Image (cartoon, rainbow, N blue to C red):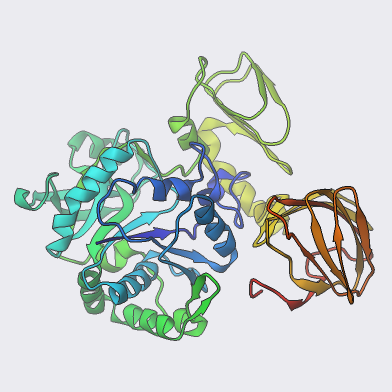
Length: 473
């Protein structure tokens, strides 16, 4: 049985301002109609004997990840929350321990949540071919057949060919993992035909992997076992124990296991793979117009060529540019030449140094019950648009420094205000005085849309005291 393990904890700041720390690229629709994590799970359709996926993510993304899966009708086997990032090896160890509890013959398919694969059928063929290798004790990785002398990827040097009877696709022993090369070295790798890009995708038997990890990194496995044993269920999630996981060494699965084991194997994969790690990568895979532009949203272009133009909330117009990136969101505009797209990381560093919220979140913030969009903000008032999902409700809470005015613009609201409870319908409103306990719920079958006007001396989100919460916050 194949157990997909989706690693969904990355930040993806090289795609700022679309991707942000609290809204990373795996929950964005970058190369199609669906988000990256949805596409990752959808490409498994057609594989035989596949179990519900295990998803590993962090606390801040938990409700967003769960909503992504709910929206696509995917019931996860588990959503496991890491208390802190420890790189990929502990995440894989936790997934292997969890899967081995459910089935002793589980074969783990490790997938980053944010990769693009243009030929999913070919991907499934190579995964199916790798099952025999994994079932025979091999720790399989997928090497991407390179199309250019890429300096942004690590490489894998293929060794001797493996027994052809074990796989329908020709596999190889792993001679070496190689760090990201300079341009001249990358060109040599490409010319040799012996080096493939390191995809970060793996396939191995859970019990076999754990046996090898206990040999190579016993302290890591022990810490992960303790974190699982002392962990707890929380709504639809499983929380690893913080103290036990904090004691776990941090390392990648490449360094911790694959570079040291004699059981490694590599299958070449030529399926239109791209990690979408930059705006340049998005231009590579995007559908292009007659001028080689990749556009999204409301754009108006004249004499613009070979560019990416993304309009999120308003018209973006451009004249007379070539090979540029233009990205507009509700709270930021980013412009740069395509060849300098990687330098966006420098801007993110500056935003963090200045403690600006644009490094972490968008103007629209996702909550477990819906979304909050900040429309207007001033010194003593703020206007927000709240969308509450059907049959969901916010926590019972109060604020010590602000009052709130609620106007229903769509749907039906159930309001608790102090000891009162009443219904508000479209075009009706109410007032929540400072210090009054209150709660907002959507009893209907369509989303509830509220305009909230905050007034007071302090309007930040930390002015909240929660008394009851459906989401354990």
